[in-house]
Amino acid sequence: MKVLSGQAMVRLTALLPGRLDLAEMRRDPRRDLLAGLTVAIVALPLALGFGVSSGLGAEAGLATAVVAGALAAVFGGSNLQVSGPTGAMTVVLVPIVAEHGPSGVLTVGLVAGVMLVALALLRAGKYMQYVPAPVVEGFTLGIACVIGLQQIPNALGVPKPEGDRVLVVTWRALAEFAKNPNWTAVALALAVAAVMLIGARRRPAIPFSVLAVIVATVVAQMAGLDAAKPIGDLPSGLPAPSLAFLDPGALGSLLAPAVAVAALAALESLLSASVADGMTVGQQHDPDRELFGQGLANIAAPLFGGVPATGAIARTAVNVRTGAGSRLAALIHAAVLAAIVFAAAPLVSRIPLAALAGVLLATAIRMVEVGSLRAMARATRSDALILVLTAVATLALDLVYAVIIGLVVAGALALRAVAKQARLDQVPLDRGDHSAEEHALLAEHIVAYRIDGPLFFAAAHRFLLELAEAADVRVVILRMSRVTTIDATGALVLKDAVEKLNRRGIVVMASGIRSGQHQVLDSLGALELLRLEGREYATTPEAIQGARIYLECVGVIPLLPAQESRPAGVETEETVG
Image (cartoon, rainbow, N blue to C red; front, top):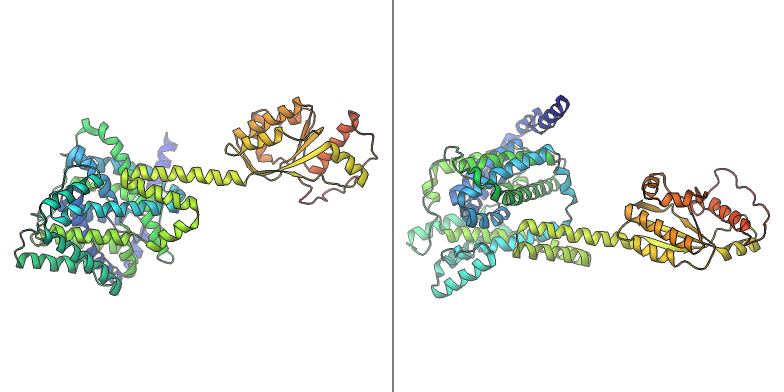
């Protein structure tokens, strides 16, 4: 027990901030200050918008950006990651709010945070690298579509219809708009989105999202546009931390949503950290520490009324592009948003919901990298299929199911591709030192097959059929030096094929079996069949010599002159196995 607790302490210590983090924060604070201010300006409308979209209100989005943003900056595994409420998480939260209410969302966030800390202690961060690129691209495309559709009610200026499926809600919102059109809201949303998209192309360094929202708010106030519904009252500060929302009796029903939230938080945060690494030179995130930081952030955010948080790709990219060099920039971003919460809540409360909808519509459009999608779709048919399936599943089902479907399909297609690489080829019998007449006589009664690639469950049965239907000869030599791996299914199939050939009176000999493959063959009885009468050989020439002796012993061929021995160590790639 003492050993286990000692190991746990070592793992925990490795996940905590160290002196190096503090030294990096002191290196260039001015540059981090500028980056943090810029990110805060970009993050403000997004935090408000995603809070509203989640169903818990703008104040929940701000609380998440402040609390989770600060904790993830300190304890996370990336120097450049910026965390907070995201569109992907909002997609998951909407049905949870509809079924369990705001307290259910807070409980789910708390439980998901505990799960993320557990994943960090189990060192599960490294498995992110096994998520295929088409799954990530399809996932991102699907999220972008869902975020855009979620904004339709506010962009049209209609009350949000009931329902937890985004396609259903969008259809009902369109039907309501057709009955009572609100062109003021539509104009505000489209104007904000257009300013953001056009401005980002011409002047990417300017935060057009904030400028567009300010202008839209001023116009709505000065013109007295009653149709432009505002956010509403916001508290001037963060609420005191509380666990009043926690209902132990509801934990059982909230476990599955918590798993979904934890999985999404891990996936999106590690993906965002990887993107940040790719945009810089010399930066490398710690995946386990990133999970730990996100876990602490999600444990703390619900105590202040915040929604679950993840690493935010868009805000992280802005942080990198504006020159951030350490986690101080993300901390400053959280501090600036906290100052806004305390000092400017009355002004923020007047922002029209339609303007925030325009911000998120533009964000959704900018999430879609057309060039990347086109390249992925053109790569292979399998990649295109995985991308489309993941995107459609994200839109029609939910994000976790989408990732699972994408991974399962990708795994199945990968196995299919690997299985196709496995081959069983009949190869000419090596002549060695035999004369032409001797070689022809041996070739009449001996056939050699070379197995290339993996001998495993996805390809083994094809080998069984080919081996069992071998020509009418007396000896089959299996050259196995190029077998990359053998699993239990492959060993059983090989054993079955050898038994079938033996029943036909055909002797099977093997050469070049690798030392690492003996265990699986031996445990399932395949090796015993070959070793029973000394029919396993290190090299192909030895197997041919063994086959020749066998044929002489059974009287199939006359005694041939003894073959001259090959000098020790003189072997070629063609003769081994």
